[in-house]
Length: 299
Image 1 (cartoon, rainbow, N blue to C red):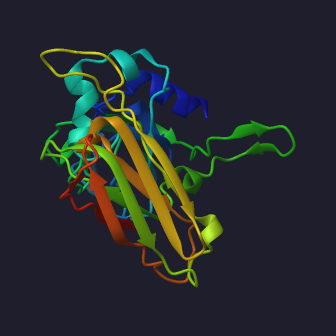
Image 2 (cartoon, one colour):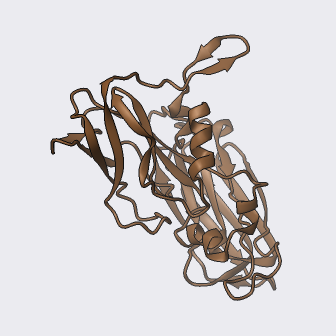
């Protein structure tokens, strides 16, 4: 876990960055390296493309070889300087791409047989929500040293079970539905009331949870303004048959800063068919406005 802590402190930015080098920058056959792959919530280990080109010019498809260990997101400490006092564009850019500030991380193992010397990893996340601004695919540098390395299990000490390896699956997104209210129209929302249906024969209603990210963006690029413009209150419950989400933002909240994730456990027998059956959106004066939220499901 020290490896991951070092990784965060070295590279984490609000807008999400794409590495120039792997971490560490040198590795042997069999070693584990990590790479910052931008600010995206959609990148997955099953869809990412990672090609290692060694010093002899040979290409190694790490995903096809089963060497892509994990893709997961990191978030800055909510008390961090960057979370509150970054330049406006750095704090806003991820929301303009439809998600909260996240840093996507890729963990891969180096295959046996790669040539010693300088090599590159060519990475394509194959997503449409990357806030890093890097053109895909992009290349990351590393150096392969002589010798055989060891796969890093990221061991951690526990109070009762000794040393245990990190469970990367627990860091990756659970199946979820994302509810969005749009980004580009500049609509200011005062309140919203949603009803979401689901198949209670597929998912246990008590296992459903709702996560609503909160924005610290303030003012504009011209005038920083005061904090608090993106505050909102969210209340939700389920009655065993439907899920109810109510949102209140008395001062108004720009649609780009409002989204909700409905999360459920892995391993369901089928898609729980989460569907918005009713939505009513209001402006800050309490008048109903025409705005249709969208729901995307991610397995």
